[in-house]
Length: 368
Image (cartoon, rainbow, N blue to C red; front, side, top):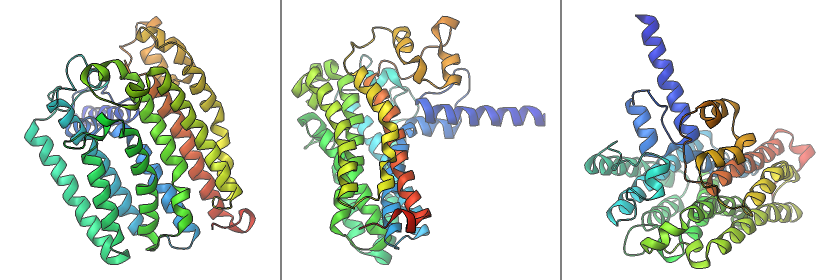
């Protein structure tokens, strides 16, 4: 009996990990409440938010302003804000007739409502709870660190909601990619820095740009993947405005700008030179650049063949079509998957470079 209980817990934990890696549940594993909410909130992309917070926190630590408890609150608040944003987007895209049975959002991962994971009332309850917790965190940090924290929170909430919600619908007007850059760069990184030290030094705004650009490149990839469906539905993302070819060129340009931006900030002594560890991610960047020149695979099996060497071994064995594997998750997404594969490495290396500066400050030099 105890062995069966232990086995059941292990299966649920393995499912959590699988959802965080692929955005999909393991086949044959019953959905517990934790797995269900990891799917509903699209927790597989929270790593990008955590990296934004880490970069802001590490930059604050270089000025001697780091506060561990405040940082923990910031990370929690940003993750909940990201979760709320994902749920709001799914609701309004469904309500506006964008998310339907033939749309990629419904195909690559379970949709909260259309896949019957939760009802509309339950979804909005979760959205409200996330935002109430965030309000409490913002008020506490505002009192203890400065009222600017509340300003960051309000601006972030507004941009996040109106990303798809009327009347602005930023994504529909070719402004979604810029909104993503603004949220994951200046708002999250500079906001975290402010919440640590209660000040807004000029260079921190510049320091927030490269990683914000990197996250925008990922979203650009997602919008390229959906360009035809978005055009049919009147969703004016930049790839719809520029055309698929223009979108591919812009995604490549954003990746190049990330590296150029980090190098420029090192030259200006805003970033310490260990930030150049991001150059170790160049092979991944080149791989993405190569993929951007190729035709989109027509089938999951073709996609698997192209991406085979980039897929972790355990997932490769599980989803290899030559071995009769299961349907490959996240299909029909393509360019965004490569973008996430790249940004996780590039962002992590930037954070590691900043952390190395803290570990041996005399050798690496300071910040600002």
